[in-house]
Length: 292
Image 1: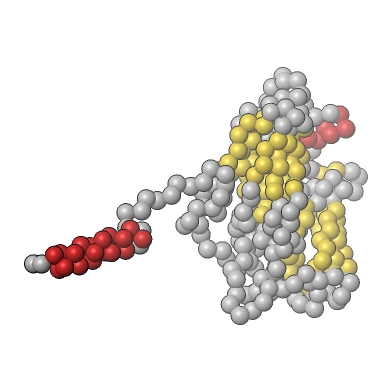
Image 2 (image 1 turned 180 degrees about the vertical axis):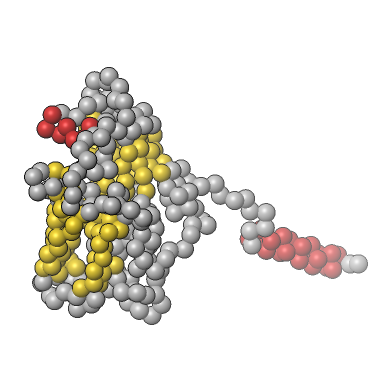
């Protein structure tokens, strides 16, 4: 074998080695990110129309996403029945800064049911729009922050709905240290969190989910909250006045509005109706919250 032949086969061997390396042969698996990012094998989203399983909407080839419109949906959630009253979340430790002030004494109670006033308005009801089957909303891209505070030993508000692009900022305005963790499913959202010092804060990146996420404080185990992360901006959560408002609702297309509360049976969804808005129309809803 002459030198030219040897040189040719040497170049061929080097070329084959580079090809194998470039194709990923022997590549190690990348461990899950610690900041809550989804893993590479995150589950595919569903079609977004089944109650309790549809926050993430699969894209539809050849069909443009539904654009924002000029419609508005407003309303109020009213409790039907007799509220159970304040249920302590557990034995509160004798810790300075852990108890809520008198004007917020209901925050010392178990947070599942917050029913306030003589007209019994209900806080923490999530109201969300759904697109027609097989279609999706334009996600939009918020750049602001959604703040979740821990002013004592409770998350305020107890339930939040984060929009695409928003950064979740968990504050600690209490006089005690909290240790906040956001719990995901391990695929679409990794667990993340840590100590939040007095007057401190911690930022989280939240990804669209098919089910609500939970947040808790390991220093105070009875503290818990709920995070809904839809893949579009059309959602809101009732506050202490029991009211909600969703703006820029698409018009001229049949949509569905659903309402959810963690205290309701099954998936938690208790109201669903279809509607079509005209330009600049406002639809007003009265949601009756009647647990069984």
